[in-house]
Length: 306
Ligand code: UDP
Ligand code: MG
Image (cartoon, rainbow, N blue to C red):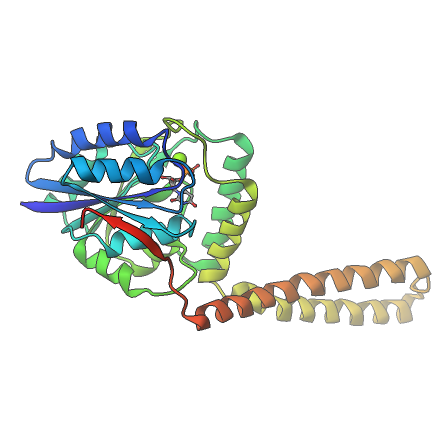
């Protein structure tokens, strides 16, 4: 009998958790050849999430939970869940039923019968999400594919079941800035994608604001690419070439370079460009600074069911 660890990061999910547990525990019982354990990670919720989880743990021996001392973010919660999972297979699921539980059976079947290390859900459509957010996400993935050479795309989320070898190799990466979609792609292994339709979350609200999504996007790119740090050089070379060309042209044809406002705006523009690139460099330095502290990725306040 195989064991499947279902890892569920939860941040203020008191409204969604009861439905989630009901739906997933039924499907979990119905996977031939496998039994499931639940690893819930309460990511520093300030509602009744921890209380609900400790109740589930008391009444169902398949349930375990960890409670963080504060909100460390979904990536940290997923890592903690994986570290505490003992299954032959591990799968990440959101607590809001946006990841259809029916797929668990199919994912396990694929891993058992076909030659894949990972079977992942490919979200089609974005019915549950706003138009602006969808557009920004697609743009972000276009940029990240260009810069980071990682197999990431819109719809390739965290809903993935993987074998022990892949789970262990993810645990090997100890970095502090954990961008999971990048990490999945970095460790490689053969992944089969099975499409599913996006639906609205069952209850409660999305935990992502535009601000947190923007930070997540910038983190993703900076964690996996040093291309932005190399860009100032290329831009600088172009600027110098343009400056030389301007001088040559004005000498040859007597241009209007003496106009004062033009100079002022030019100086402002150049300074602006410099500032943007300086800030990019600063971000790399600060990431290195965070890594060098070797701080824990999360801190556990309470555990149950282990
Ligand atoms: N989540 C978390 N920590 C956070 C934010 C989110 O553990 O800081 C969990 C959340 O409880 C849910 C999953 O991550 O189980 C996905 O979050 P959400 O549904 O808000 O994201 P969306 O579906 O809008 O991308
Ligand atoms: Mg969701």
